[in-house]
Image (cartoon, rainbow, N blue to C red; front, side, top):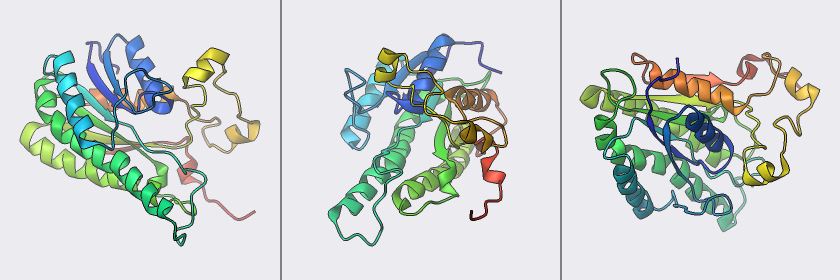
Length: 258
């Protein structure tokens, strides 16, 4: 069940895509939402998640804005450059390691550092009655299912799952802070950007009948599917250290060569 009490929520990667959709969803539910992103084409004020000083400054600002309390931290941001068009790992250019370093910095190091710094705020917050704040990490099914030449992306997303398990034990035993992860499948978010707003782009643009039929659930996923999973994890006081897969059943399919 969605929370009936206003929550203080911090979402990384909130300028576009999944993060932007979550931002809108929680705002409509009258929660207070702080978004953190480096996308200057979408936001007037930006922060770089690959920069430690920037993350620390953001937490201080969140502390001020939310008066020392945070109910929900959603680690969603990821450097997505190269996803769908990765270079082969045998490539000897500097781009390979630059891409690796950026994806690890934004997709793995930043969530860890941000979570560490937010612990005092989460301890003072409340996700469910009688319990402190909670952390929701966003991963994808690419943590388990690989494509050619996406080592950096898949590694970062798999690392988030390990981080989720470890933090759920450490923060659970010390502070009863719950930590869970959502694994995304195909979530269509081409409408979640300023340009799409200006053009009134419908959600289904670019999707085909075959795209829907490929999913056992009969359709492609949308941001509301992720928001519902997040609400479940936020409000379920006895659920921690878990991975919730939202992929329309695709991960259970046997795939044969055509």
